[in-house]
Image (tube, rainbow, N blue to C red; front, side, top):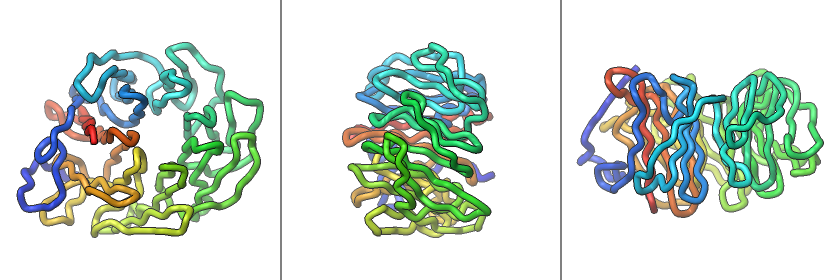
Length: 294
């Protein structure tokens, strides 16, 4: 594992918290804060799986007060204005238990519904339908549909179903350990080539456009808030995490990170949230979250 906390005068990508002001939310030693993040109307929810808690922050862009909550801590989201917490065995909505199947491996929440995937099925929890599908690795609630990266024998594809359960088939290229999300009505999926040293990673849209990262980026592991990222990149002259916009614009950099460990993204047209759960705090992976108001 490579850890770094570098200054970055040698790069032309603005560094979060150095070249541009951000609001930081920092975990305690061992928290892994930011392992999952979600953003809605200025509110942040983030998982801290170390103590198995989630952190909810009102007015997160200006350092509002944080509330810690116990309960499921693998994934967090917002659904109809309510905070959702989930794990493989349980789920809660605004801290109330919510009936859900056991063995959940992926989750998604948004205007089109509340969805989970098990090893065998994709299920919409707020409506009476499910479909048989194996190998779901990533889920996202889109506009009137649900998106998934589905893998079999290391072959992956981005698929979609309507909010009513109709199969829309393959809609976008995807790769193993890639994320999927919708931005401004367009689905994007990643192919980070995670286990190949120095891989650039690739991100494609359902409209057919694709782009790659720099050597070592593994771009496409995380997609959210209109951006994509991969891993902390030791191959660059100044090692850093690169957070790349899907539709063009400023590439942001984070100067702290851990090679081969995940980062998470969320946001909307006004804010970007970057979660780095493996950033050390007190000598342990405590995690840091940056909130950038754009």
